[in-house]
Every structure is written in structure tokens, then in C-alpha cells.
Length: 524
Image (cartoon, rainbow, N blue to C red; front, side):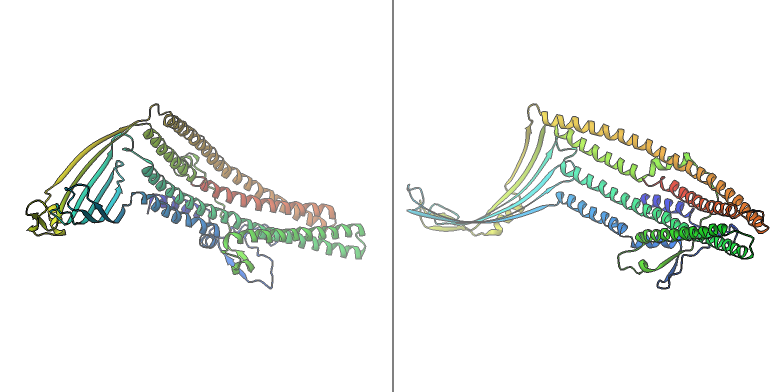
């Protein structure tokens, strides 16, 4: 497993710490239990239970954004192959044919009219070397020449030449050049693609968690509003009985009916919010418009555990400064800027190239001599194409050469200006990274403090809900003996509903705060 995968595995393990282990089992009175609520029944829809772990796994497999980002490393791999192609060898071959006939202008021309037919067969291979900017080339040239010149001792000749050349930059182009910089840059960009994939996967997992708890909260809100509606209907029924026996006025009856109408409206609003939240959640889970999950009703089966663990902010900051994806990408981009600076420095140097060449040639064919000037041909030594090749193998006619080539643009103002600009850009990048690191420290610190704050708010919300429950029970008891009014009972029950909703929001805020604290240590 690579270091990148290790870092990502650590983040997923941290995420698992906030994945629920079961229902909290906290009773809130009136038959209501946190985490036990179910979504409204729709006869035309299949109900599907889904845990948080299953939701994350499904999203990582089906989410279209994740599938798209997963292609980036593959795309970058082909970009790397394209950059490596700059160092691939290039092979070339040529064939030539020439037939030349000349009229004589001198008795030394070898005849009143001479004809020469020449064919060439050449092949070469060139390859830039990925080290020190050198270039290696080899060529193998062959020719076949046939002539009727009276003075020629090789009327049909074969000539072959094998050449090797190597050019090495000694100043500009030795340490780096555009091709090597492009290759190194592409490798770094490939690492950035892997980092972006990790960030996208982790971010989707976080969004799934937030949306999952949002769906759980939306279902709980329906249940809370339903409890409020049941209480309002119960109060209305009690008022109806009292009006019938003459112990309550019609005005209080109307107030109770208004309370029922308000409760029905609140429950309808909660159902609308639930449907919207479920669609948002499904958007993260499905792989296309034909996914059957779109027309199913989801039942989240997980509920958060509310065990507080003091966040270690200092340790989290250290992890974030080393492993945050945005910082890793910025440092990689800084390395790319450093490579560009090296190229700019290279361009300010003179061109001084050392070229070494070695060649060996051979000639073959039947060798003749003439009896007298322009006389009859007499075969001296039979031969052919292979005769020249044997001469090459025996290295009978080697040629060595070494050259130094120097060039330098006088002034070179353009390259010097580019170098200074690259230096300033690198300095600017360093300042940007320092600013980014400061922002990470602030973000992680805020996330850690938010974990503490949301847990304190949760405890306060729980106490408020407990007090509201007792107050509602007292008002209900007093109303039963005629010591309280509709208004006071309604106020107490509205306060209880509000307290339950506040506690629910506090639970979700705390769970999301814990997840965010883990997220900001690795993803940015």
C-alpha cells in the first residue's frame, strides 16, 4: 500500500469513528424515541433500509462525480506516455535513384558519352537520451553505382558506410531542458490527479454522511410534528367534550381547532422538507436517471452515538499540515514552479556542445584493371556487396572526429528577464503556501472548537427538552383539573416541540462537527 493510500485509509478509519453503532435509546416522553421514526408510508413505493456504511459504499461505486474523477489518473497516465515519447527513438529510411549521362568534353572523360546509374539505400536512427540532454544517432548508408566510363576500375561498385554520433551539451541543456522538464512535470501532475481522486472520494463520503443525517433529521421532524398534531387533536377532543357539557366556551374550542390546523401545516412542511432531503441524498447515491433507487423510499437505519471525545487540536494541526490534499497539491505545484525556474536558468547559459563521431566504410564489387589507357578490362579481384560489409566489420577504414560548438546571444536580455520572472513567481508561490498553511491552522482549530461547542449546545438542548417535557406534563395535569387554559397548554406543548427540534438539530450539528473535524485534517 502506498503512502497516499495509507493516508486515505487513516481518514476512512477516522470517519468510521463517527459512524453509528446503534440507537441512542433516549426517551423523550409521549411515546417518542430518537432514531425510531419511520418515513411516511407511500403505497406506490418500495421501502429500502440503508445504513450509513452502505450509503457510503454505494456512493463510492455509483456516484457519477466519483466515476468521472476516477478517470483523471488514467487520462494523466496517457499524458505521461506522451511526455515519455519525446525520448523515443526515431527511425528513418530513404531510397534514391539517379541516372546521369554526360557528353565528353575531354579525352580524359572516358568515352564520347558516359552514363552513370546510382541507387542509394539509407537508414538511420536517432534518440534523445533522458540523462544530461545528449542525443545519440546511428546511420547505415549504402549505394550501388554502375558506369560505362572507360577509366573506371569498378564498373559496378557497392559502397557502405556505418556512422555513430553522440552530441552532449556541456552548459545549456546539460542539467535540464524542455523535454525533461515536461516529463517531470507530467509525473507530478499525475500525483496531483491521485490526490484529487482521494479528495473527491473523501468529500463524497463526508457529503453522504451530512445528507444521511439530514434525512434522518427530516424523518425525525415529521415524527415530532406528528406528536405535536396528536397532542393538538387530543386537546381539541377534550375541549369538544367540555363544550358539550358547558364547562368551556366556544372561543377556546376555536383556539384548539386553530392549533390543530397549525400542527397539520407544520407536519406537511416537515414532509415536504423530507422529500426534498431524500432527493438530495439520492442524488449522491444513484448512477443515472434509470436507477431504481430514485423511486424507492429510503429508511436510514443508523443513529449517531453521542459519546464526547476531547479533540486533540494540536495533533490535528500537525496531521493537516503534512497530509492535507490542498497543501500537497500546492507543494507539488511549487515543485513544478521550481522545475520551470531551472529551465529559465538553463536558458541563460551559452550553448557549448561536444560532438563525437565515428564512421567506417567499405567498398565492394568486381575490381578490374585495363590494359593500357582505356584498354580492355581484366578482372583482378572478384567481389560484391558483402565485400564492403566485410571491410566495415574489419574496420579497415575508420574515421574519428570530435567537435566543440559554441554559441551565445549577446546580451541575452530575454532569457534573463524570464529567469527573474520565474524567481519572483516561485517566491510568490512560497508566500501563497505559507498563507495556505495559516488558513489550514485556523480551519482545523475552528473545527476542533466547533466539536466542543456543538456538544455543549447539545447538552443544553437536552436539558431544555427535559424541562419542556416536565412543563408540558404539568400543564396537561393542571388542564385536566381545570387549573390551566388552552393557551397555557398550547404554549407548553409548542415549547416542547421547539425543544425537541432544537435537540434534534443539536444532535445532527454535533455529529457533523465531528465528521468535519476529521475531514479538515486530510481534505481541503
